[in-house]
Length: 479
Image (tube, rainbow, N blue to C red; front, top):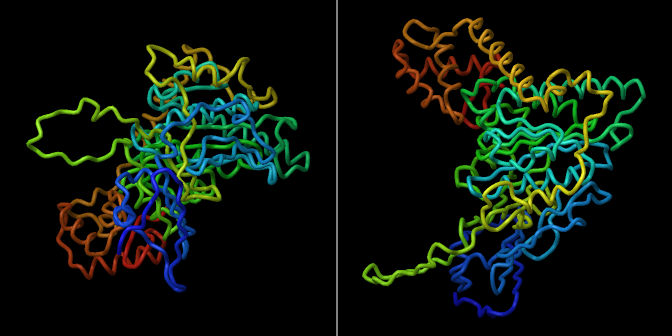
């Protein structure tokens, strides 16, 4: 068909609908080609996940330039939300810090590939927390490089895996202490400042703590899950910020996945593999489509290979840092972009614009009533030497636990077929078919087995709950 005439200086909105019984799908390059548009960043596509879609065509990318936030943006409204940026149509993009209607602290998840602007978004939310009297506990597992300006602006900041474990232990202990106090008072929900402040526990680069092979993976996963269970009703929220979205990179726990997908989920620029995993893990409803976010706003221009003239501005186009989707919002498929956070050009030290976001004064602190529950780690948080002693003690504790664990079957020659199958499934990143399991088992150095033996054993393991059937003909370790 002929492409419609799209005015270059007007905003055009098209409402599309497929016949009843069909689900709307679209291919972005085909849509761009059909509309006669050379710059796909001028296009915004939203779907209802069923039959309808809105296609908006702008004269230029509406999110190319973003202003910094105002104090009003950073102040929680009566619904416990702050404005984190704007959608492509100019409407405010809001994220919840607290749910006053239920008295619930927030669980949150921020995903984004390297360079997507995740650290700046995290800094902004922490600055909002400070301005709203929220106690922030922050674990920066990039060695403190993700948000160096947070030092002195939050109640507790750690930069190592040992420090994060000590922080999580303290948070769980405070949640249990509050739970006992609130039960005695007959309270079943939380109210900010009545009498305790809201607490936000955040782990940046969380995949480093929770990925396969990480030294504290099991305990870290257990503590985060426990916070998700007990913290919500006593005013202690938890957030994970990560580059990877694969379930195995975040503790490999179905319970943790379910907990997070019910919270505030922000998706910045992603890879195709990440998008597939978001759908597989249930963080994005099946059928929903998101428009890809390019790394740069530079238009793609075809040049002859024999054109010797070089354009010095080829790599000078603005990036798309901070652009993303608020998957837990009422408009999950509406592209948005966070406010411009920090200086445009890199600074030689701490960024003065980010420091200014935190505002004057001291950060909110944990209530004195819970200091005993938080323990020595909290008391030593500002004493680097004393805190290092606690971290070294934790390392020793971890080493002793590992030495005390008896080695399990490796699946080598002579091992039980059940153990060999469980080892194969545990080492796999994705669910496997029986044929895939059979091929891996026969490569482990043990006795060769037949496909029927593997299928029968898989069925038996699934029946007793050691293996989970996660799809048609797919198997994974039970969690």
